[in-house]
Length: 220
Image (cartoon, rainbow, N blue to C red):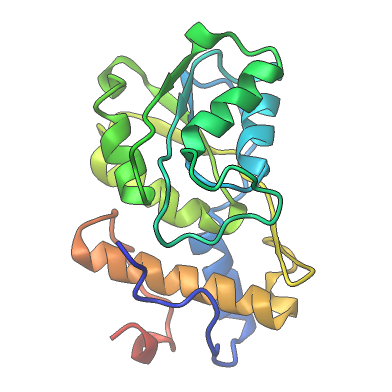
């Protein structure tokens, strides 16, 4: 499914209240990581996907990993990604194994092509009704959308903890503290906000309860 909202776009001037609201929607409120029944690794070619999964495992946050990702037809590969035709899950799993994670600790699917499919296809290989808590790994500025995808399609008695990593674009870091200071950061975060609204209206993710006041014209 090709994104309808560009990754980089012109962003309106934002006031401090809008910046705060966008930060909490897109990045989610900050929480301390804690032990969970499983670790959900969203697909991607950024090294952070396996680095944070390895970190979470070695810190004892969980001993069960759910790895997702096929070959995305639309995603731009990370500059260091060498396996152009290999599924993202297979590469991530190789990195996990190289770092001492046991093979029987890993459940995976390697056919999904986007975030929605990451979750739907993972349900085919893992019984989410058997767990009560889930730590999920993804880019920090995608946490809000990934979280809402999980909530929409997985049993609602599960608690979620994000364990993300900052991504870099054009030499700039997109983090919850600095995204508003650069043009690329504002574009990435505002685009994520619009995707949350759009996919929520489509039923692909749990919809946003309330839009950011003053930005309604951009969500129509």
